[in-house]
Length: 171
Image 1 (cartoon, rainbow, N blue to C red):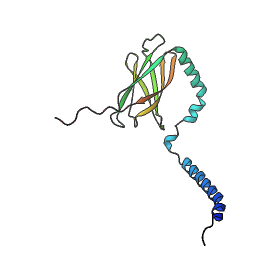
Image 2 (cartoon, rainbow, N blue to C red):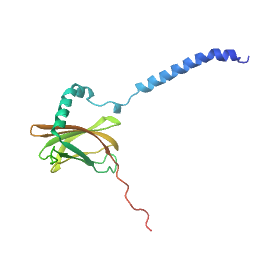
Image 3 (cartoon, rainbow, N blue to C red):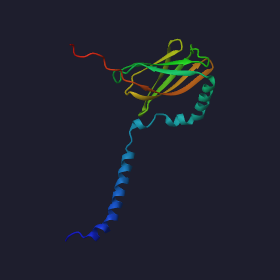
Image 4 (cartoon, rainbow, N blue to C red):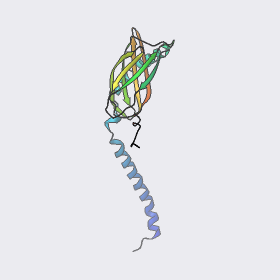
């Protein structure tokens, strides 16, 4: 018995419905299999402190302080590198004698967070050492305190891999 055109056109809406259902089920299964790296630790707790953070950021803007991000190239994943933050006040003078902390989060892996203290290496220049697992765009949440003054800033800055060594076969 040959398939007649009227049977094809009668089954066409059923095929469309089944295709739509299979796409929906596939999308649901794919979206429900999330990875840990998609979930930022302590996100809820930080959400509860959001208003306080926004007040600190507004006060920091009024201070007029600026922060500049500097890093050396990453030569191998997991190898320690120094990231430097240079702080200047509203008059362009280096901010010295402060204590601080930083929190580094790779954009594509929010669950891996590097946290630590900032150490003043040179006047106004504060260093944070980490062993990153990726190059690319990172979020840098910086807190610097000097006396009663608190400066809070979130930067987005890129870590680069080091350029390959120059040279080659002798000749």
